[in-house]
Length: 582
Ligand code: ATP
Ligand code: MG
Image 1 (tube, protein in one colour):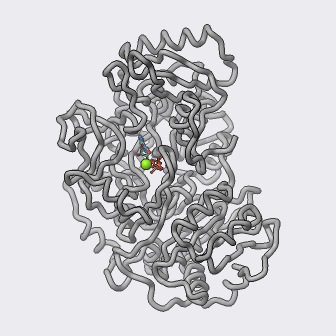
Image 2: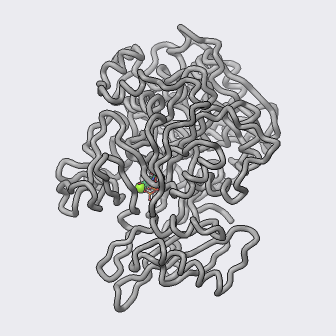
Image 3: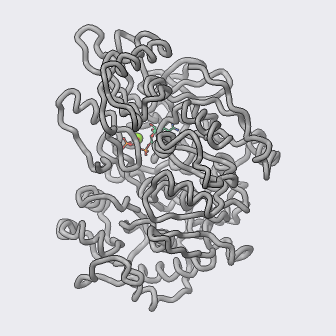
């Protein structure tokens, strides 16, 4: 599949470009220590994400709006850096009063409410390890995470508590439950022995003694998305902030006057690294929207808040693609300057669609819960090669290695590996040191993804190692087949697996969801097969196509190919705790 590279952002969008300093920074290299100096971080004084993201702005821009919050019924609140500093101090004091200590695990189970952000940074201030949980979780994933990590404190709203309270008795380490219910907004009540957030905050002092400090102190525990198996608890350290700060500038192109919107929930790593840390370490105003997402709402929010930088995910973009080839005339999205995507491969067709509809490329970038920060990115000033994840961010050395973990030359497919030691790298998997250690081989961190690098240093995603299909000796990545299908006007989504075959070992099977207005038929099936044969090598074209209403996805929107495979083979589905509801 050949796509023309999409050149830099169109001239009329270059309000703050060309940013030569930024380009020069990337070319000339840098060192992490000078960035720490830039943020005035000192190891034993203030090396804390809460300081870097919030309190450090008290000096120069205390009144700048850090968060514009819109509730799902249209309520609006604004919080300055000073507001956040005081509220997080208070919450830190609430925690201290309850005897929470450095290293204790505290979990937040809440919709995207301002209190989620306050609890998160308040917890970090005292050195607690904070675990934000996605609010749509049922009781099982919540219990698994609290039990695995030995959490001692749980912060939630009464409605969500009602969903999970029967698990509390199975969690002996859980000591305190804090209930947030501003203006009795949520149905439900405060149980015996539970603490009212509002009452506790009213009594708490806004002055905090010394903040916990240390770049290696653990900060956040994030369970992975569960796309390939049981979610693992990746533990991060405060040191990650320096890389969020840097990649916020380099990959998201954040500037002082931006209005930034990250659509990821803080229950997933993108929602903390880039929905909290990156914008606020850069002192940028961000939008937080409590509600769920649908295309018309996204467009309204971008327009209403004059969003300039938007960080989203391929599923969201595919939903917009499904909604139409044009932005509805009633929306003026001309403020949008830079759009980025992460979480799954971004099909080239989606990049080209972005160019048509937004008049700019969508900038894909690659990273994982484990890597903690963006490691490979399409920068704003770079010409985007649709389908490529981009080039390494400064200080990062990814390479393609073979199955004995030796480097391969450009153009060859293999395992995507990274030289360990970057600041945001996970420090362990909670309770699973063995698995953690098994991810490092021959001096490389092995990501579990397959990719290739071209001669210009752009990386191209092929598939997760587990998903790669071996058909008659040819290795086929599901991504290229899914991307080819997506180019067909009838296809909304596609998920591709290897189906066992007595002769070829595996054959390529595609599950396809059609766009509204198209009905599954043998004719469309034949047409799609022919369409793929024209675009792909013979071995890669699907041998079978099955129509399906909707692909199984994680709650963060990733296609769960292992469930398609389990369905195909009639096997047990394994861990489905992160599977999206119907
Ligand atoms: P689990 O590890 O539990 O199976 P997961 O790998 O989906 O879940 P995350 O850490 O959220 O959990 O996702 C990281 C993975 O997502 C990457 O390893 C890669 O497979 C995929 N990914 C993320 N961004 C991109 C991208 N830009 N292009 C291709 N793949 C991506
Ligand atoms: Mg993973």
